[in-house]
Length: 181
Image (tube, rainbow, N blue to C red):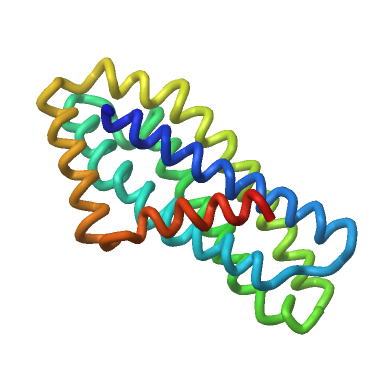
C-alpha cells in the first residue's frame, strides 16, 4: 500500500466519525439536548486520530516531501490543506471550550457545540475530497519510488513512536463504535 493509499484508508475511518458527528449535531438541533459522552468520544477521536496521527503524517512527512520536490507551501494545495487543518483545530477547540457549560444545559453552549461540530464535519468532508481527488494524485505523480518508501517508513514511525502501539487500532474500533451507535 502506498503512503497516499494509507492516508485514504484513514480518511475512510475519519468519515465514519464525521457521519456520527453530523448525526449528533442533527440530534442536538432536533432535541436541544447533548449527549456529552458521545461528543467527548468524537473529540477524542478527532484530536488523537485525525489530528495527532493522520494530520501529523501529512504535515510532518507528506507535505514536507512534496515541498522538497518543488511544490510551494505558501500557496497552492499544501497551503490550502494547512489552513483547513488549522480551521479544523479551531472548530474542535470551540467544541471543547463549550462542553463544560453544555454539560450544565446552558443553551448557548449546547448551540456552540452543535454549530462547531457541524462546521467541522462540513470542513473536513470537503477537505478529504480535495486530498483524495487532487492532492494525493499530485503527490503520487510528484514523488519518486524512494520517496514513497521513505514516507511509508515515516508513517510507521509516527504510529509506533508518536502515537503508540495499539492506539491506531483503538481509534479504528472507536470509529466503528460511533458509526454503529
